[in-house]
Image (cartoon, rainbow over all chains, first blue to last red; front, side, top):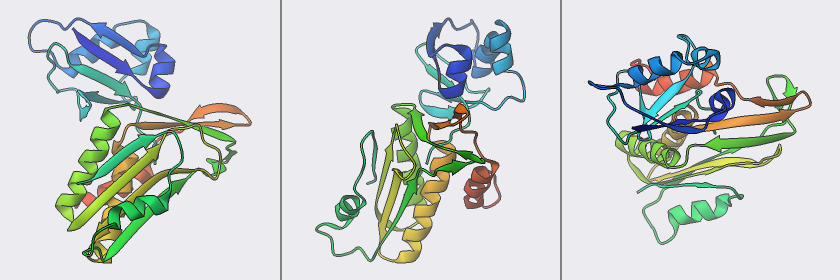
Length: 84
Length: 155
């Protein structure tokens, strides 16, 4: 299992702040998880559609689609940041 | 060496500067930046603002940014204090303070830390305007400001 977190406008759009999902066998990456999210209903496929601006962090460091995942990882999805 | 902090309540810039200089005789310069909540953004009146962040990653990201500044410039100490809302126009939202022997290093590092904070620290602003609530969109100009520190290698 990995924990998925969603923040800000993405959390509101998906109506989901946190969930645990099973990792597929093999050598799972962020990209594999994103493909699974895109395969959900319209809300999810739209939020993660290619070209949509979102960012991902693994264990609280910026990551990308190629970042490998292991059980227990914390994967966070969020819009481009706007602090300061 | 850096001190980073996320808090709800206001901060006192004078106390933050004092924390950089107390008991030291080697500080020649302290550069500070304070970011404020403006009452006008993207053509709309802003009456209130709130801020969401990613506890844990926020502190890690700010520490990473300060560590990168320390690699690039000869600094003595740094402090970054970021508030999370709610805010009203006129409220101070973020403080960066950098100390060094000479002003050039302090000025540059202070600006670098802010530019990287704007593009790498996981904070998200939500504004309340007369038309309702809206999440603030990231600006391309912030990415450009951050990328100028990378010597053409990109953000």
